[in-house]
Amino acid sequence: MKKNIFRGVILIFISLITISLTSCKDTVTYAELLDQERESISKFLKYGGVYTAELPNDVSQIAVSSTRNAISNKVPFYELQNDVCMQVVDKGNGRKIKEGDRVYFRFLRVNLNTWAAEPYEIKMFDMQNGGVGNYYYPDINDYYFDYVEDYNVPMSQYYTYGLGIEYPLAHLFDGAKVYLVVPSKVGFSESVSSVVPYLYFIEYNIAKN
Image (tube, rainbow, N blue to C red; front, side, top):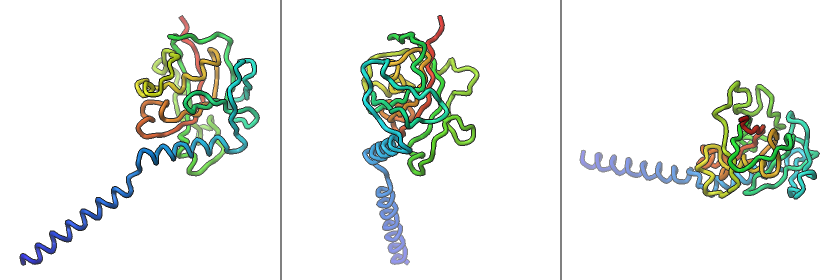
């Protein structure tokens, strides 16, 4: 009897060790998540003729697609700080956004890790298979940020919406509309720990006093 009990204890112990080792093997490291993020972003920025370019110093030289309904392969995704890339749909109304201005925004977004697993032509405004966000909400008063020009990556996680979505406003104007690739390090706070990159469509508007 004692031998059987002892043998049973040994078998349970071995089983627990096996489960533990298997679990450790299956755990994805943070470095692996970062690699996946980079691969997802790179795949998107090369898909369907999409391409990147350096941002011109002169705002008048920034190309616009003029359509929100599809991602263009005729104008580039411009490279901004910290691996954020933007494709401009509309530069806005010419009113420059200043430090401290309260900016409201509407957005839709697509998880690029999910997209990269099975790439497809993104139609952000498709009601069935498009992006998700606050774009169709009747009231977006809770979705705003007070514009800052300090793009310190470690600080980004302390902003609910991250600093990445603010980057275009250093180059564009009130009323601007953009497609924006945002890596997790400067994304919405819930994206930082999960290491999820997103493609956004965003419209910006300064609060009216």
